[in-house]
Length: 511
Ligand SMILES: Cc1cc2nc3c(=O)[nH]c(=O)nc-3n(C[C@H](O)[C@H](O)[C@H](O)COP(=O)(O)OP(=O)(O)OC[C@H]3O[C@@H](n4cnc5c(N)ncnc54)[C@H](O)[C@@H]3O)c2cc1C
Image 1 (cartoon, protein in one colour):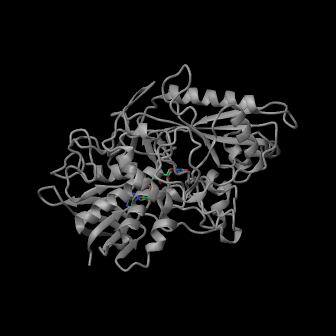
Image 2 (cartoon, rainbow, N blue to C red):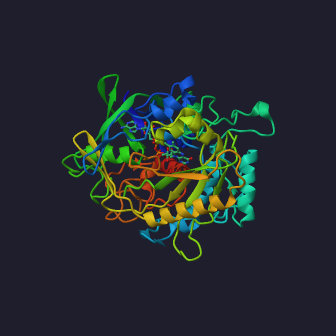
Image 3 (tube, rainbow, N blue to C red):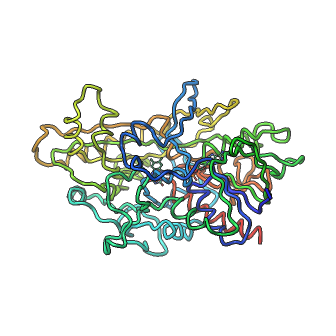
């Protein structure tokens, strides 16, 4: 009864998409997800609950390299972290797959190229109903066809800023968004263009996340079994150490062992590494599939930060996150190294402002600021570093991480503030235009990748190019872990496209 063709551990961008790809294969599939379905409740859209009280984040503590505890900004539900994502689904650029010299070091070449991913990117965009527009982003990679779903429109204040940036010679482009918004026929639209999207779960299920797009549509499929609140704690191997023979799982307070011809770990880059490291045995003393000593290493999470610009003009926008800027992605005049990507952030409100404001700041003041703010998210590439790693000691999870390539991020941040200052127009209420900057601390692990990099050489990679571990024949890792470099755009579309690609390989292998 506990024997399957395929076991998939985790239901996020990687695992959830793989379920979709394999669902109609006729193979007997078991999905093990440590979380439950995310409850639909009013708190989904309550900023105090979601941001201030961390209602949906794990209560686990992880530890930094000095042993200081922190609560990671990550969540365990069906759909994984896509339940909370902003739905910006960008492709990596062609050059992101090549070796690139950054001001802070080298971003390595990938074993596969953009052309290998292109058809899967296309399919991934259709599966997640990505709304976008081709031909505006100056760094956009070649596409085999236009987006199936039209770009989402800007609200008036955002359109105004967009036009001012265009007048400055910049090329703001419509963010490709996995949001189920139909602007032609409102009755057909799930999305209501609210201001509780980026970072919030969607109460009306209008976000194309891995749960809504991939897991739920397949739940009635006969060959698929989903067990929620099923945390996998260890993988066992045969005596030779080259096959996973048992998937140890905590379920309803009991320990169960499941087995399958193929086992796929898709727990997210940190937890996939944790599971492999914790599965050390006599044949794999430094962790399962870890003969390279690379499991957990090269952990990346991007240099991420936010700018909250208090403009002199009010900004009544609700669904603010509609355009991005890639003009500085590869650098600028006088700086011939990559800088990164800029996108609008979900609209910041008073309760979000309160989290970073001095305790004495009156609510009315914060509300006034929020009603004038235009909010941005900046991403620069962090580079793979052998010493930036996920480590386990007993049950404790450590993230040893030192920032790198910060000069690129700082330059991007300064450039953007100077541009914002140059386009702010006329004072009405607030005498000064203010720009609050924040760099995300270690607990901001939303963009975690790289802990089981793929490649051809078992000495320099954990996974082969099909994302099968070099060391264990029937073990795959299909999530953000496989990235050899992090590029500077959001990672999910590449995780999704890769899951479709690996899914094709697994189907072929089992046929
Ligand atoms: C607030 C926020 C906004 C974001 N916005 C964007 C965006 O706009 N665009 C973008 O591209 N990306 C965005 N991201 C990042 C995106 O969500 C992640 O890149 C993506 O979800 C990673 O996919 P994954 O499959 O690697 O892992 P996850 O989605 O984290 O999935 C891992 C799954 O494994 C389960 N799991 C973990 N351990 C175990 C275990 N031991 N046993 C069983 N199950 C386990 C987890 O519960 C989870 O379901 C955002 C993230 C956050 C938090």
